[in-house]
Image 1 (spheres, rainbow, N blue to C red):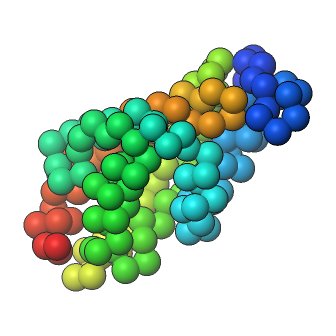
Image 2 (image 1 turned 60 degrees about the vertical axis):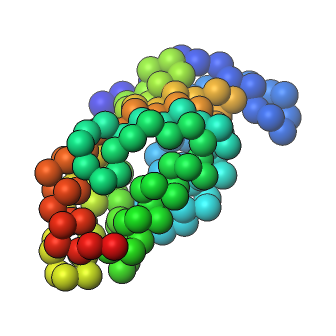
Image 3 (image 1 turned 135 degrees about the vertical axis):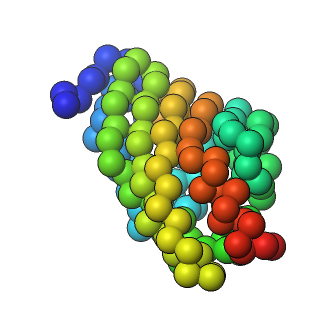
Amino acid sequence: MSTARVTQIPTAQSGVTQELSTAYVRELFKNLESGDGKGFFDHVLDNVDWIVEGTHPLAGHYHSKAEFLAHTFEKLEKVLPQGAELHTEHVLVSGDLAVVELHSLATAKNGFRFDNRYCWVCRFVNGTIVEVRAYLDSVMVARLFEENPI
């Protein structure tokens, strides 16, 4: 897969433009892979528009980073002792959008293997994520919380 480099975005620090690239997005998502949520979420707008699709305990339309974290990652921390253990599998960049496929290889408190796959469609402005549409296996998330109530 080729790296698309088409959108010029000004950086906040220098005023110099950089291109949104697959390499930039992969580097950003490495923070989630290493368990550095802060390193990732430092690049997410405080009033991000984040939709988690589906009909499960994490689904919803969140209008801020704080709201999203409280209703998703903080819930997951209660049932996944080692966190979501996300791994980036594929990244495609086009314009100001990045499509990122992720794989969770986590284990729940009860031993349930949370082998979930995600697709996040992220829109960037000035190198910051401002919008996300997240797709995942709703049945698996529902089962996770049924077997590991919080």
